[in-house]
Length: 360
Image (cartoon, rainbow, N blue to C red):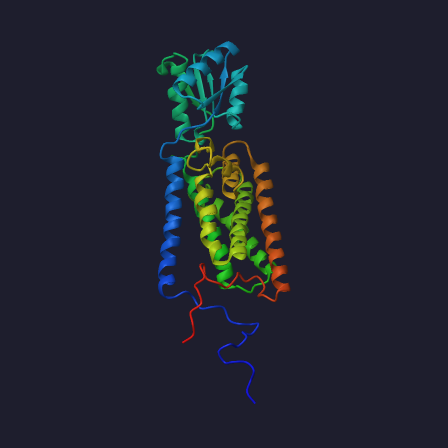
């Protein structure tokens, strides 16, 4: 008796092994396309953000009458349209407190008791300090040599260029991105609960290690409360790692380059670590308030220099990322279990499917 099933038309078993990696032309072309795409996006985003940076409505306190403030605003609008937003303050002390809490980026008192005074926060970066020093005295028609410049929030002695927070964040995001990838590559069938415990452990240990290295114990580049910084860095690390894991779980191999673009490139470029987010183009600026990196960097800056500015908002945003990603991973696993797929394993398919080849 002959079998009704032809040897060339066998039904694949339910536990069929994943297809082999791409070979031939697709295997040669796909790495080129993906790597060039990521490189082009990196160059485009960073050049768009920083090749000609200009601020957008940076708030500045001015201790003067309303009429004098309006005259100053008109003069500034002629020199630097829409770059400085002048706000009236009644006394120098109130303006100084606003600078210390990052409510404004500087304060100008043209009729101070000891002469004209410009209050700045060096922790905002050299670009902001230089802009205010060069423009406000000139717009007020006062000689810059007669102006007293006081730095109310200077940079740490171990961070003379103000870039330590950016490099710390970049390394942090890179490590979290790699963790998300390695987690699935090293243990594709790990239970979700175990995977989340691993992620939490990574985040907590990173939060304890990074402020130790960047703080007074080693480099002296990041002042502030060790425990506060450790908590913020832990949350940021977990949020980025969770986002990477979620993209990989939802999209399979395509999630890896997408996570690189969203978290590594867009996240770091809009973080405010190089320049304040007020310098970002309008199409990039909103990302600084919603991506984990931007909210985390601003909170770390607040904890280090600006009397804990933006910490509450960062905790809320980062917690929302972590909870949302954990819920998505759980829902995907539930759906996969109903369809008999491997628990927690990303879809086992290549980035781009090749057409089936006829059997010879």
